[in-house]
Length: 334
Image (cartoon, rainbow, N blue to C red):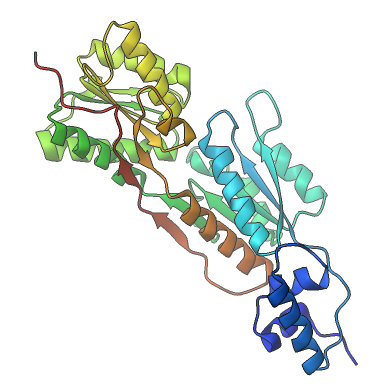
């Protein structure tokens, strides 16, 4: 009797292919009830178990580990992929270490079956994207997070960055702030550009104009936030929207160095709602990215590609939400 495929068994028994794979390979993550159901279903259908097959192997590449949003997102994606029976390896590209292309090249040589790329070259519209096209032509499944490559037919997962920045402006406006500054990230990155678009749009809608001195480009780090905040304070900002929670913490430090209080004199809004936000001093108001939803979308898109499903590629755009904490308040009377 020919050995049926894992997918055939899953269809006949009424469970997922990942569950069948885990049962046949004696892997954890399957309840005893489900395990018994699979084995009983195979007996009832007189199915012969296929030879054990190694779980799919996927690489997840992040740009850095210093910014806590990246390891948190990568870890969430790894967990969701594990639920599909997919093993993941997380790699971090840095300015002084292996680059994104270095990691990709190594993983491809080792037979990687899929790639999840988080805020890599696809987040920079001016970068060379030729390597992504080479991967696509080699039929290596990809999911891009935090950006896209024009016309490349692969699934992407992002949040509505412009909406997030607009939410932060609206929150501060409702508190009574007018001179609202934006400490943005590197201007060549898509997230920075999208947030600036949302900030400018909401400032014009709220106040009729935008003051150029109240937007400063820096980098998504503590020192970047600190440097940007000093310039924004000099420009008279009573509130600062930072491009990340790390930048927000740097902003708080700059405000205090200037002899001012947060939020008594200057309100601060972060971005991401990483684990730093709730434990800051004071706890940060921030724009939250829906990590679990994003991770589920990434894992589902990757699983479909690994299984050979001809599902169309999808651009998933998730709505952020503002989480109000103690770092924002009404502006001090002047």
